[in-house]
Structures are given as C-alpha cells and as structure tokens.
Image 1 (cartoon, rainbow, N blue to C red):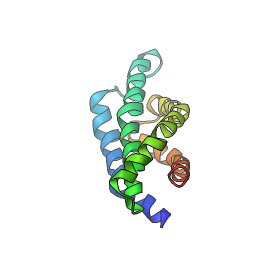
Image 2 (image 1 turned 45 degrees about the vertical axis):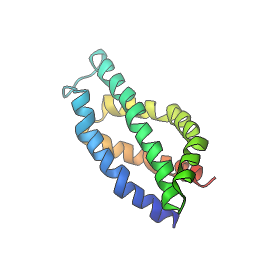
Image 3 (image 1 turned 30 degrees about the horizontal axis):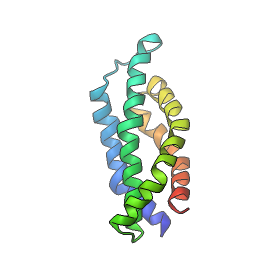
Length: 135
C-alpha cells in the first residue's frame, strides 16, 4: 500500500516535475555558464537555492501532503487538514537540510547530474515524508 502510493506519487507527479524543474525551468530562470566557480558562482547559486526552496519545495510539500492524503482515500477536506497540520513542520525541517544540499549541488555538480544528487538525498527525505504522512 504505502510503498505503491509513494512510488505512484514519485513517478506520476514529482518525478516529471523534477525533470522539468532541473532541466528546463531552473536553468532558464538562472543561467549559469559551464565551469563557473568561486565568487562568480555565489549569486547564481544563491538564486537557484532561493527558487528551489520556494517554488519547488512549496509545490513538493503541497502536492505530496495533499495528494498522498487523497491516494489514501481521504477527502479534499482531509487533504486541507493535512496541509494545515504538517506543511509548516515539513518546510521548516526542509530548511535545515535542503539549502545546504542544493548549494553544494548547484555549485559543484554538473547540471546533467544535479537530479541524481537530489534523487539520492530524496531516498532519505522520502522516508521522513512518509513518516510525517503517517503520523
């Protein structure tokens, strides 16, 4: 049950969104020249982290908490209640981890591999989200 719903959300919603986000939207919003490093990279990396921590994270947690509640048989009202209960907690926890991961990711990892790093960290993050969803 739970594993299937998590996989369904990942394959049907968040996976396609991440592919578009990291390969199209974010490079378009904040272009970075190949090999950009040091002080020259600070501003574009900070912009990417800021966009990732607002637009991407908010989409992720809103769609995850609400969508998983619906996939578990809950109603719209249940989904809204889940957001009211857990969104702030999840987002504040995100802010303790993901800005640092993404700063390293955007500064040091080649763009075509950034999604891979996100996917690896997301295995552990997904376990946290699953715990929150079911607590």
